[in-house]
Image (cartoon, helix red, strand yellow):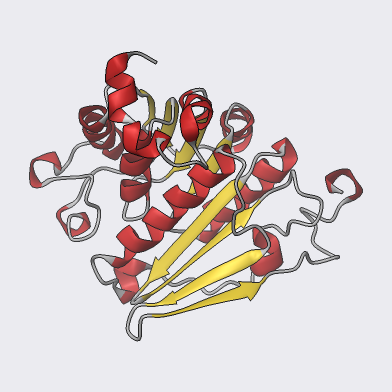
Length: 250
């Protein structure tokens, strides 16, 4: 790192859990972020600011006026722009040293698998269960850690699923296809800052994964924004899970 980079990341390098070696590790890392909405906005901005070397962002949508209440990476002048283009522009403004790879579409099958295999960590900021299940399966197939977040109304949750840990559960240990509740923010609403809170925790957990620090693996963090109560629940692996309890995953 040159003097400018040392100054940029100085407050982070001061942390004994990071230090110069940790910052170099972040700069050499690659993270895939699925979704550039309410959760993806803070995740992308903070990981760029923290100096994660390469950030791959995927989202098929364009910016809508109704997004601006909570998706703080997009501004009024970005309405009708492709979300990944809008987001990439803001990320480069925050930190031009970071490589941003913009994918203006949803990732499926082989393309999803390839993108996951190239990442050191994946952050799921999507808003639908179909994507969450697909990303989870790709991460466990490729043995890449996954940071999952979700928000609805005034509630939020974060979990880390790490196939590199022998006892780690996966997303399908928490939700089963066909039994999940299909509620969305567009149908039920969400308080503006809540995705920022949950997304910031996702960004924190991602940095901790990259730095090999303790994470929420095996736990589910729940937030009630109305009462400001937090709960942390143990999330054991389901011995019958078709994704993470197969012989090849142990």
